[in-house]
Image (cartoon, rainbow, N blue to C red; front, side, top):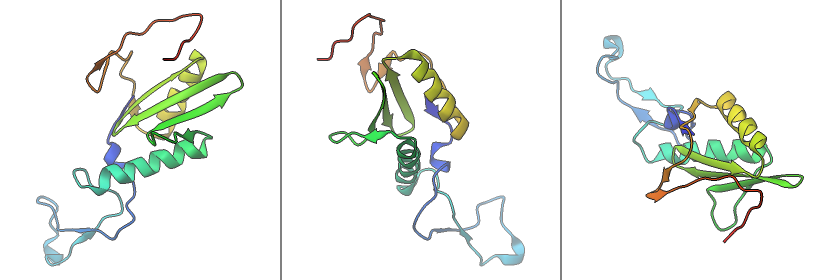
Length: 139
């Protein structure tokens, strides 16, 4: 999944002001600035703000953050498990049950503006080959 406008989804904790941008100048109040309520794309607060919002949403929906990798979230469903790996504005997810993947995609698209990118073939420089097997083996 790819998050559309991910950095515009997060609220910031700090007080943050910007000058009036070209094309949006209010000539009646030339000396005024705008107080930002949401993170601004390109600033260091933006990814942190987005990650906080997404993490909070996942945890509220019973996902558990990985102990060694805090960008990995897991959720148990009886004998199945759902895995969610977050990398900035990309989300890679998988499960031992296809219906859990479909449910996750529906839930995320209902909460955030996201697009499905299709089957994973490359991620962080790694080539991914997927296949369905009747057993799972972890190395």
